[in-house]
Amino acid sequence: MESQALVIATVGALGIGAQWVAWRTGYPAIVLMLAAGFLAGPVTGLLDPELAFGDVLEPMISVGVALILFEGGLSLDLRELRHSGSAVWRLATIGVLVGWALGAAAGYYIAGLVWPVAVLFGGILIVTGPTVVIPLLRQSNIQTRPNSILKWEGIVNDPIGALCAVIAYEFFRRRQDFPNASIIEVVPPLIIAAILAGLVGYAAARLVVFLFPRGAIPEYLKVPVLFTLVIAVFVATNAIEHEAGLVAVTVMGVTLANRDVASIRSIHPFKENVAVLLVSGIFILLASSLKWDELAYLDPREDVGQRLIAFLLALLFLVRPATVLISLIGTNVPWNERLFVAWIAPRGIVLVAISGLFALRLGDLGIEGGQLLTALSFAVVVITVVAHGFTIEAVARWLGVKGTSRPGLLIVGSTPWTIALAKEMKALKTPVMVVDSSWQSLGAARREGLPFYHGEILNEATEHNLDLTPFQVLVAATDNEAYNALVCNEFAHEIGRDSVYQLGESADEEDRTALPESIRGRALFESGFGVNDVNERQLQGWVFRKTKLSDEFDFEQAQEKLPDAANMLLLIRASGTLRFFTHAARPEPRAGDIIISFSPPQLKTPEDKSSEKSAKRASPGPQTA
Image (cartoon, rainbow, N blue to C red; front, top):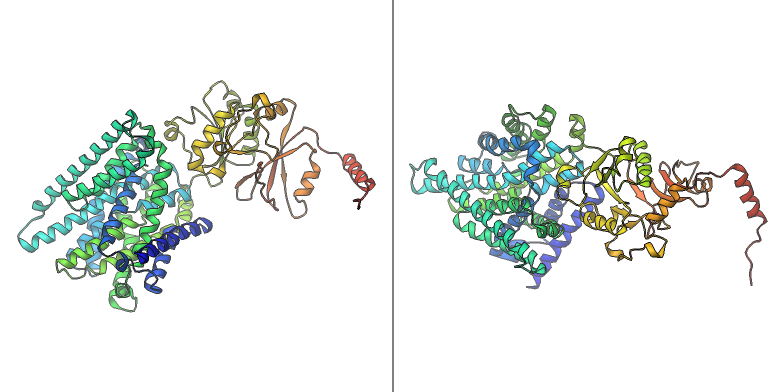
């Protein structure tokens, strides 16, 4: 028991540690997690999950994969398909068949796998790993359509790939008992099983939609009930057919994502945290479970290793590009986007988990070559994640599918102060968007030619009508401080608690809202100016000023040039990153930064500066007792 607890603690530390290092360095997290698991397992022998958990390891990983796919399904909104629906449909039908055929052919003719193993592995290769694709897309800021195509393909094709592997396995298993069995005898029952599993997942989602809004489940039990139901649906539908549970939980997630259930929206932060923990843990467990004799197949000095390396290259440069380009023939997707989608196909946790499962089952059938699947699946994950993870930025720029590269500023509330701020940021090439529910208030933004969105920022429809991807910082500055706090609290889990800001409490006691600090955004300005404070100063003629720092002109000199009443608002790094001066923290200015200040209209004259210097010289030194 103590050894199992130690393994769990070590897996958690390695997984989350790898995620943190990935965040700090920008390297793909999956590569670091695989490296950590590999070092902890085969290299040092620190972890041996099979010894620690025994027969429980496989169901643990299976349930984890099911929860990950459910979480992915919750992020799929059918309204996203208005731009990419036909492409996703083709990749989920034509692409599956073409990819399966080409992957199996490459496995047989290039890797030297026997036909049963090649066909089964070709089906598994259809998956593209949402646990890898989605973080890559989020990190790289890809345009909406290719982003949507890759995200949907990654989540939809995961259960389809698992079913393809099941079809291949069941066919070859049946052929052992009935040598003359045909594919027609195997496929229809499996398709029916998948349909039944999907219906069970749909029914479970509708049950949640019915019970949650009616108060049948108390608020504190909604998340446990939902996750318990997901596991129950997965286990029950797996009893119908192996891996049919993946279809059920995916359908359940997509159904809930497209129903208006307020409770589901409120659990998003929790389910995202659970997904991070599961992905981290499962990757560490699988990587540390590798054995040296399995990795020996990849030795490039041996004939088998050379064939497998050639297979990996064919997968990157032949199988995936041909699959996508054939599938998207006749669509309205531009060629640059087709080529981008054809290149990006990192594999992830589902590929490794399913390959490990069927490697054991093929061994039970006495089919040679099944033992290659575990090592080959890890090699596919590593080579695709490294190749695509480290080239996605360059390829996106080269093909012109990169979104706005500079971090953007989303301003909620159209007031004279926010319009002046938006004008200043636009002049500095920072993407900016002004959002307000009042068309009349947005009149100033329209007159100034500023990007704007007319609508309620808290409305769920805004998520689908307004692309929030370019905006890494939010400033809520309406005339209502309580509403500003509500907006910041709502977007804190998406943008980050340290990236949502609002004006501070008003200096006037009568205008204070007395909101708890825990639900407010970070207060702008070190002085904590409130809504009324900035509005009054705006009427008095206060303006935004920008100052470029250099080695010869530092922050202290910039402050001396400004009036004493001036307040520093933010600085812009050379990369476009925004850092705000707040009541709780101030960024460290350095050469190359641009400082934005909010100050009275007059600047200090040379006479003012000389008077200050004279006053300093005339002032007595420190007194000692």
